[in-house]
Image (cartoon, rainbow, N blue to C red):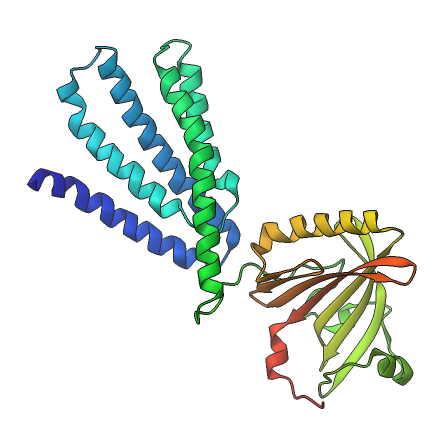
Length: 302
């Protein structure tokens, strides 16, 4: 029992430390979280491969069974603790499955010289599919629990730039902007107005391989809102762009805070990103709106 504790204590302690580190670093960048999860699962996959190799060596009569007991216990602990740390993270399926496939691919290559490794290769490749799927379900459940709790939501990434337009930029940096007239502002029928607010038409901006009409909202010369409109000829084009935008934005921003048929919202480190779609007369529109968290400090006029 004492020997087991000497082995288990540092492994489990290391797993707790890595888990805490990923929790902290993951709040700063989704890419760090994905990379860290990939590395941790890679350690788990390698450890699992080592255990499988030991077992197949004993099965083939190349090692006495008594000689593999402690190596298998040690590496099984490393594998299980690493995979537990990697499970439940809000990362793509590939970030968890690919490490298994890479290690399994190496085992498959080595099976050309050592046919017994084919067993381990097959187990690792299938294990990657199973682990990636089960861990993703756990992650979705954890995300749902977080959204329904009183804990603050984790925010990933920053709102993207649309062409040259980004949140927090100075309006002097945006060329050829034209302020909306009083009549145009009344037509907007905005429910909220801020002190020293100005709204501008801006030249079109490029984003996701499309050209968007741009309206900028600014307070004291700083852009707090970027509204981008894309009108397409038919519903098929609109829905194709909707799917493309969803994929483009999920990579840096992660799972949306809210997702429905006609609106998707991401909480970001500097505000939020809202994606809408609607029928617009004879056209079909997609609207992308970036809003800065700075609005919480603005003085409202209505």
